[in-house]
Image 1 (cartoon, rainbow, N blue to C red):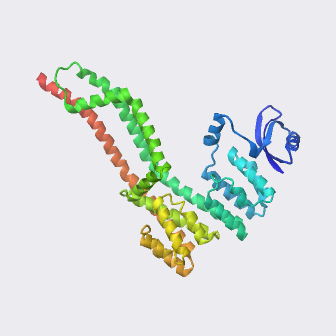
Image 2: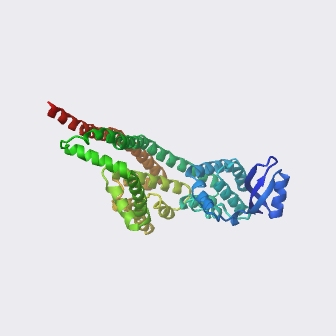
Image 3: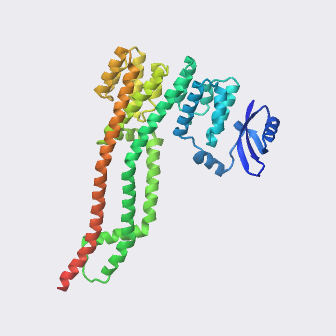
Amino acid sequence: MSVYEYVALDNKGRERKGFVDATGVSAARQQLRESGIYPVKIYPAREKKKTSFSAAMEISFLQKVSPKEVSMFTRQLSTLLGAGIPLVPSFSVLLAQTKNPLLQKILAQIRADLTEGKSLTAGLENYPNVFPPFYINMVKAGEASGTINLVLERLADFSENQQELMNKIRSSLAYPLIMLLVGSLVIFLLMTFVVPRITEIFSDMRQTLPLITVILIRTSTFLKSFWWLIILVVVVGVFAFKYLTAGTETGRRYWDAFCLKAPVWGTVNLKIAIARFTRTLATLLQSGVPLLAAMDIVRNVVNNVYIGEAITAVGKEVEEGQSLAGPLAASGMFPPMVTEMIAVGEQTGSLETMLNRIAASYETEVQSDIMVMTSLLEPVMILVMGLIVGFIVFSILLPIFEMNQMVK
């Protein structure tokens, strides 16, 4: 059996797209006709090629599989397997209710691999951009231990927990960002539309304008004439920043060092990294992944070069027979509370439990710290906006006051 992708028309002439399992193209065409739709195009799912630029853009931007969709798929697959439904029929059920075309295609191909006798791990490994190494290694451990449904449940719990944390962080930052955008837009409109009309009255004045008014007029003129240049500089700056911090090794190291050493924000970044490290390591160990393999996987989820290198060094010392807590403490990256709790977990045989407690504690601290930062950021932004508006008003009124004094 192979997976074929089709474009067809139904009885009302509406276009239908989807996937079908068949032994060949003729069998797929016959199967579609029997179901009441008339195929226009049929081709093997693996051999479909995008040739036009618009198709490439569609795959790149409109057909991404989000972490939320992967989490939902994992939860549903765990539920189906837990109910005693075999793996291939479970994928058929999920395939029928999946709305994302790209995920639908991926699930169809994995189902075809399973039908051919391949493992679920082998099917997932063909899509590293959708299923990261952390996900694949946990599934591999679950298949080896015969507890795949429990492992998938842990994976879903982990993904949902991480998404919940990131959603709380984003929601905390949403209001200040909206204030910043709205405030910047209001000031831009003042400087480009309101100020030029008001300052026109100064053009006929023979007196020398105050320096503050001259600065305001020149700034307004520049913004009105070269607003497009400012937007261009901002856009280029954003892309250059992303390239330097993500596309070059040196830039990435400088940025990661700044993220750890920046006042206030550096502490929050370290806490986020520790929460990810401990939560991911606990989930891997609970799923049966060996400690050394788990350490090699978890260094990629902390999203910081220096913490990742510290974890790599710790993994080498653990491989040489040392405990986990000692090298972590010696690295200088992890606070004493973290290493002490890990040491207690190793001594009592409850390492996974301790790691989960550390993660929960640090996730709570991160949320609290960000709430405090945003609560302080709001009045600061209001103050800055007020000062800018005050500068504009004062710059306009000052020459008017001086003119009144001259008349008297």
